[in-house]
Length: 265
Image 1: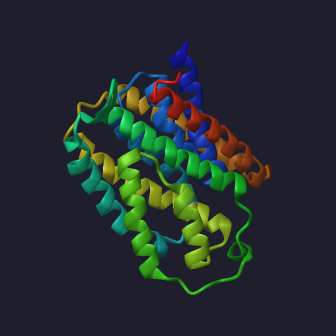
Image 2 (image 1 turned 135 degrees about the horizontal axis):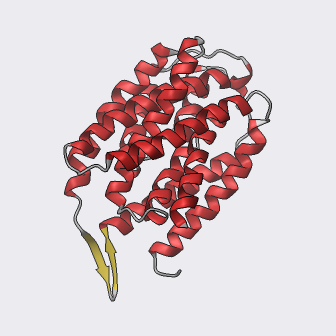
């Protein structure tokens, strides 16, 4: 039963990416851990592939329509993909199995990763709930600050590598505020960046892990189908309202993960 619900929720990953350009990817790890029983390392690896493939599907459509800023994507993606690959290839396989012990409570590698992930999720949820339309999003073009874009690319790449999320909630504000892209173009460009860095990060995992390809491809196909639905609904639905609702849902998920991993549930 849990697996059936998991497959249904997989479509929401793509739906969110297609509709609001972010948020859905951050559901992938808890989906894989709590509905399919994967450990945290494998879940973050699979998440990179699923998010990368579904984002690539959406990004291709935006590129064909000329809606993505490929020059900006290159500036952002280049440092991000280096950071995410290094984290997945060298940091994750060498994390200690036990971080520390306090009395009878042991913080394992999986617990640490999932609690850190939950904190990132909670922060992303708060940003979604509180976000208004940035001033630059309504058409004011600012001078691109490519140094800051590169620095943020490194940070986003490192976070992506550790938690296995696409990072659209970090990328889109950067593209809007640092580059001055209109919101729709920022969403399209974000999908290009997410696709490239997620799939490059996954290459680091292929060298370290045994991959269940049939399962992974099935989930990726479901998420990819969801992204087409999201792009269609984006033409007729107010994405800002859905973004807030999705933010509240992420808050609940994050709190559940923290309580579950701390042994309170």
